[in-house]
Amino acid sequence: MKIYFASLILLGCLFSLDLMGQQAPAKNPIVFGSRDSLFAAVSDNQTFLLHRVKSGQSLYGLSKFYNLPVGDLQAANGMADPSVKTGQALRVPIVGKAIRKKRPDIKKSADFLPVYYRVREKETLYKIAHDYFGVHTDTLIKFNGLKSGTVSVGKVLLVGWFPRSGVPADLPGGFRNEAQKNYIELKTRYETEKTTRKVVEMEGAAVWQKDDRRASEAAFFARFDQAPAGSVLEVTNPSIPVTLYVKVIADLPNDAKTGNAVVWLSPAAAKSLGAIDEKFYVKIHYLK
Image 1 (cartoon, one colour):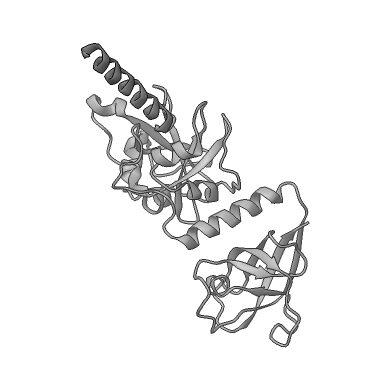
Image 2 (cartoon, one colour):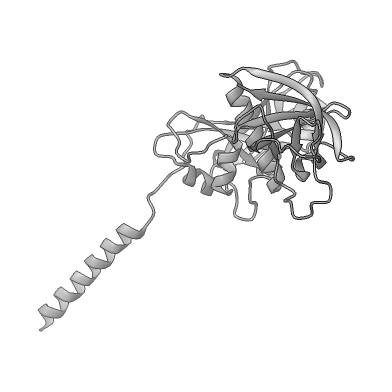
């Protein structure tokens, strides 16, 4: 009898282990080498980390490591398909606080990755320090052993440290809001597709429905005749100036409200372009 019960217990344990093996998600380690580092980028007031995908990593695993929605990773990289390839470079939207601005002590230095930033045209050390990373100019001078506050284009600066354990649970990353996410997604798509397609420019009146209270404040779309549904337009209000990216959803309606307009914009798009009147002048770039 004891042998019988022992056999049942053993079978039960094996069965439980088998179920655990089936239900447990596959491991997806985000491991960095001892000499690895990360680069940061700033675009449209959004901070990104640049991550190069290693073997065995997935978008889901990266979203857990950087503590942000998978959709934000897809939007930041113009990805319709959530699959990634080894060696692929991804932009990871994060909050600035995820980058530590205080040098870790010697005992904990191995727990952090250095984060660098490459200086672009028309950028100053003051702008990079204050506007991008929220530190004093003297801090970056000290980090990088600079003799002055002058930096040249292409200069690589140490701007902080990132924990090898990933973004803490109490510091979620991703975009600040849905409008920022949609803007980056559409801009990324446009810039990517522009490299392989012809850019066509036109100008004229844009119209929008000023009193449409049902429209989402984050929906950037347009009705436009010259590009197919699903394509992205670059629309500029030259009087400010400000540029926005919108998705074409249909042809321009032919009615009294549109008149001689060249594009119809959603309320969110028109407001983001600084529109006050229901008809205003714009410049459009679209792809063929």
